[in-house]
Image 1 (tube, rainbow, N blue to C red):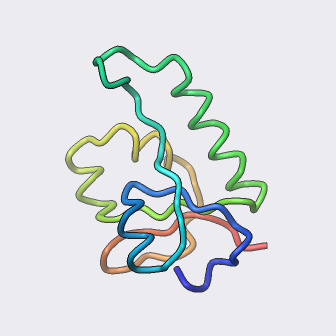
Image 2: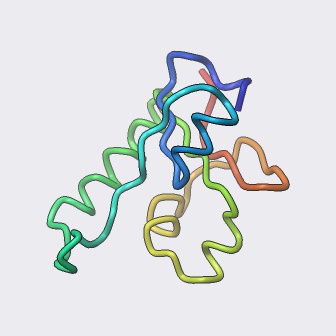
Image 3: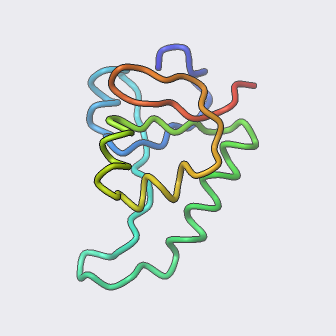
Length: 100
């Protein structure tokens, strides 16, 4: 994570871990459902916007325990990372993105 340029946005499923481990902020990946259990009408657009930022080389996705999240059927992780390029695969997760 230290190799990710400072001007790139990081989206993650574990924003507190990013703050502790990398000493930099991260933004939480979109939620499919609102707290009341209703579908979030902006979910699909949010996913598409985040993915476009990755392809524009403005953002990276840091997903902790990626294979476990996929095995458990975490739709947020699956939807966000589907078709995204892997930059690094690490023991505790995967970083998706394209460096400038």
